[in-house]
Every structure is written in structure tokens, then in C-alpha cells.
Image (cartoon, rainbow, N blue to C red; front, side, top):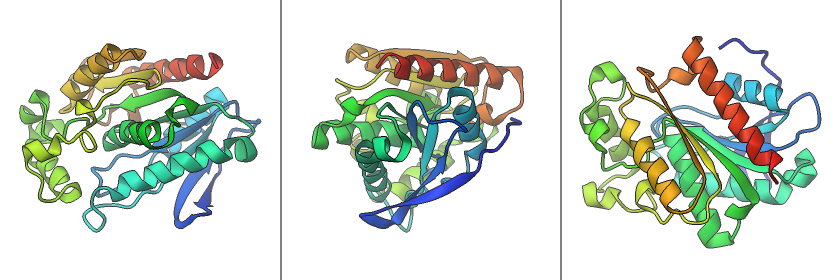
Length: 266
């Protein structure tokens, strides 16, 4: 994906100076702010890894994006990453008007970042009555069941996320948990009570080990009374949104249109 990279900056959270968010602002006053949570299997990656995609959203929609530089496993196992995402989300709720001139908030991420986005919303709802401040959710190739869905168990090395890699991800982030322990709704969002959450767009490819995660989660999202838009792309792989092809371009456009509808409706 070839886009103009807007200049990023880092903001350390006042009450958590070791935790920062990487901010990409549009060239005009933001019309909304999106809290982004990166992927990387809980053990890799950082807040700069989706600069291209976040710059594209900032430019196309006129929104500010804030990517959370959460702590990584295995040095910092669960719930460290989720604690950091919750802290960043609470800071954004309290600070968006002052920092960005808007109170219209979005959240989303890729892979484990999508799962963390949902878990963050659940914490905001249950602990702070604050999920209501977010008007839309962008969930790309999300991992929502760490006890492994059928598509995860049937995956191969050719699909990037083999069963062995998926098990290693769970072992690093959630040490000592068996399959039943991994179904804890505070770990695997597929098993959570999803009522009262914002509308979400789910994007996934048929050649992705976590295909079933999005199929199942979108169905449960709707059954809980929330708006859900499911987009399934033929033969697209886990990292397809980063590719420079027509499928990825169409997916990015659909995501942008969905998010625009979300913040325009409030």
C-alpha cells in the first residue's frame, strides 16, 4: 500500500508514563479519533507497525489515529496488554475533546489487536460504563477464540498461522491455561456477553487460519443486538490488508466507508 505517511508523534499517558500512544493526525481538525491496537501474537510488534494503514485512514477520513504501545508477552503475560489498552481507552475518553477537538471515538485492530479491541470495550462497559463513548469498531482478521476454532485447527504452515504457531501464541500470552481456561471470556472474546457494544465491521479472508473467528463473532455480535458488517474476501490471507492489490484496496475502502457512517451517525 503506497500512501503519504503523515508525521507521527508519541503521547505518554500522564498517569502511566511508561505507556504511550502513537498519534497520527490529519492535516485538518479531526472529525473523530480511532484507538488502534496492533497485532503481533502478543509477543511482537509495536505501535508503529501500522503507520501506513493509519496514515491512510487519517488522510481519507480526517480522523486522528492513536496506536497503543502495549506491553508484550512472554515478559508481560495476560492481563498486561489488556490493562494497557484499557488505560489508553480511558485516557482517550477523558482527553479526546481537549487533545483532538472531537468526542467521536472509534476502536479497532488486526489479529490479536482485534481481539484486544473487543476485550477493551467489554472492560469499558463492565468497569466504567464507557463503551457507549465509542461509535464504531474495526476488526480485521481477529483472533477471538484462543482455545482454537475449527479453521485454526485445520490451518497449515502455508496459511502463515499454523496450529503450532497459534498454540505458541496462547502459551506465551496465557501461560498455564488449558483449552477450557482459554475460553475465559476475559481472554477469548467469542465467549463473552456482547450486549451493548457499538456496530462493528469484520474483515477476513477465506485463506486465513482465523476465518471462523470472524464468522462466529459476527454472528454472536448480531445476536447480542449490535450492528455487524461481515466482509469475507476470497483467498485472502491473514496479512492481506497490507498487500497492494485490488482486494486489499476494496477492503480498505469498505472499512473507511463503514467508519465514516459510524461517526457521522452521532
